[in-house]
Structure formats: structure tokens, C-alpha cells
Image 1 (cartoon, helix red, strand yellow):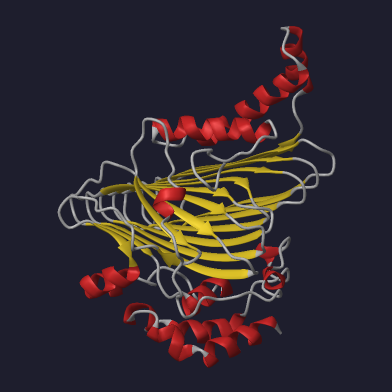
Image 2 (spheres, rainbow, N blue to C red):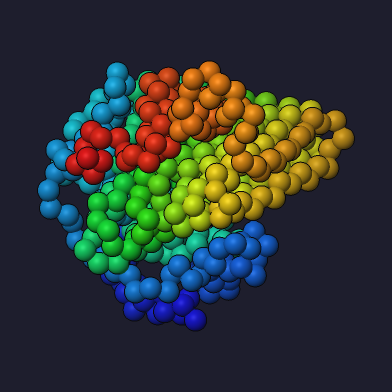
Length: 446
């Protein structure tokens, strides 16, 4: 049993894990261990994991940096990401180590904190304890419990009441190792009442070894808060990425979660959003471009617990070669959540006959005054549209490119930063052309 191997590692190195971390994380380890021992990793026996045996992804021998050995060098010199005409405040996580040493000093509005769990928990222990681990469900996903057992640091954004952070914050996750490596990343975003913040995450792989990355993100949006969370996957084919994102929304808050998978090996992204205040709005979007033998699986669960809330799920896949995709979307409308507006859409293109897509849209409604809809389509490029474009003098390859770009545009339209949206459109075009889908402005992407 692969779980026992990691339980033994955890128990053997528990003192090291704790000593190289902080009290705020250590306090939840025992609870996480108990949860992990009861359930283990998800397998295909579970209905929500019919097409991915998560436990099997943990079987290879992986290294763990439990002693928190730092990396030499300055990532700000080699990996600087530059989006034309858009300024971001840039931070780095190397594997699962927050890089503090060369971080430029940024002047934020009063009370805003952006940085490591370690520093934030030492400066604001009460705030950290109030939020860390409070919505990340340990008992229904063994990967969340596993991450909570082993995570020793993380990246936190704290925006106090009424503060607006104008410039987007950018976090670049770098996977780098000469041997197979397991990383456990943690992200915490706290936007108090009337606060606003935007985070762009970019995942990159430097070395062509096998990586397994678990990531747990918790997003708290207070009353009238606005949070944008963009997650861009540009990993190698040898990366398995398992993420769990939990969102808690209060009255009239607005949260956008937008994931774009341009390259990966195996990717499973879970989204759990709870609308806990009236008039809250949630947008959960995803775009997947996969080829060769890549596998991308998205699961989204939006829980409407209060009246007058609105949610939108939009996921689009373009699959080529022998790529496989899976999508499971669930909307729950609780009995008191009258006047709910909830929309779910999943559209998929299988460009080659050997590509496969598995989809399961779901609605569960216990209120009687709601407007909810879901739809799913899977097919190939429209031959009539191709013929029309070619009759206008457009070559076959160019016509296919135009149709695929048009197909994915709906997800890009939900990017609320215009200059980021333009850059992502460029990356999507490169990906469809068979070129490197990467940015081209840093050592990783060249």
C-alpha cells in the first residue's frame, strides 16, 4: 500500500518537518494524518475519479526537501516574466520553497502582506490561525490531507478591509531537480470586506525529470470583496499536478477562478466554491489544450447556500493525438438559496479520432425559484465552417487555427485583465501552431 510508505516517512521525519516549519502549519498535521490514514489517496473506485488513479501517481520514488535546503542563484535575474504593457509584482516558489533572498521591496497599501507563510504567521499569528486550513477539506480528499501533512511553507496574500491592490501579483512556480521530485505547495488568499486583489500563477518546469506537485489553495472573499485568480499551466509532459482550490464567499463578493492548461503530463484540478452570502458572484473557468498522451481532468463543485447568488462554470477542451480529458461539474442549490442564477457549460473538440473526452454535468436543486442550466457538447471541427473559410482563400491549416482560436475565446473573455488576455491569446495561438506555448521572455521559456 503506497499510503503506508508516506505515513512511515511522515512519522520518521516528523520532528524535522515541524522544526523546519511554523506552528500554524504544525498544528494541523495530526488532524491531517488521521484523515489520510482513514481514506488514503483517491482511486478509480470513487465516482469522481473514474478516469484517474491518483494513488498510482505516488508509486514512483520521489525526493522530498524536508530539510528545506535552499536553491542557489537569483530567479529574478533568469526567470523574469514580462507581459507587454502590464506591470506585476513578482514572486517565486522554487519547487515548494518561497524565494525570499532576492525579493524586491514592494510598497503596498497599508496593512497588505504578500509573502511566505512563515513570515506572515510570525507577524500575524491570530489572522493566520483564523484562516489557514479552515476551508480545505481534509476528510473528502486524501491529497488535501497529504498536502497538509507535509507542507512546510506557502504563499500568502492578505488584503485588509477596504484596501485595493491595483497591480496584479504574479507568482511563478519553478520545478527544478535532477531526480524525481515531490513538492507540496500551499496558497492562502485573504481579501477582507471591500478589498480587491488579482493573482496570476505561472507553472514552469526547468528539468525533464518526473515531478509530482500537490497544491492546495484557500481563497476567502469578504463582503463586497473582488478576487481574480488566474492559474497558467506550462509544465513538461513529465509533470503530474494535483490541485485543490477552495473558495469561501461572503455577501456581494465577486470571485473569478480561471485555469488555463497549455502543457502538462497529468493534471487534476478540483474547485470547491461556497457562496455563503447573498448576491455573491462566482466564475469558475477552464481552458485545456492537450495532445500526445496528456491527461487533464477538471472537477468543479459550486454550492449555493444563500439567495440571490450567481455562478458561471465554463470549461473548454481541445484534444489532439491520444490526449484524454475529463470534466465533472456539479451545481448544488440549497433549499434556502432562492433566486439563484447558475450556469454550467462544457464544450469539447476532439481533433483526432484517438482523442477521448469524458464529461458529466450535474445539477442538484432544492429551491423552487431558480434559473439553472447546464450543457455539454463534444465533437470535431465544423466541416462546413472549414469549407466556408477555404472558399474565401484561407488555407486549410490557417482555417483550422481560426476555428480553434474562436472555440477557446469564450474562456479568454473571462480574463478581466486586458493585457493578460492579449498575452494568453498569443500563447494559445502558438500552442495550436505546434510552437512552444511558452512566454519567451525568461530562461525557462526560451
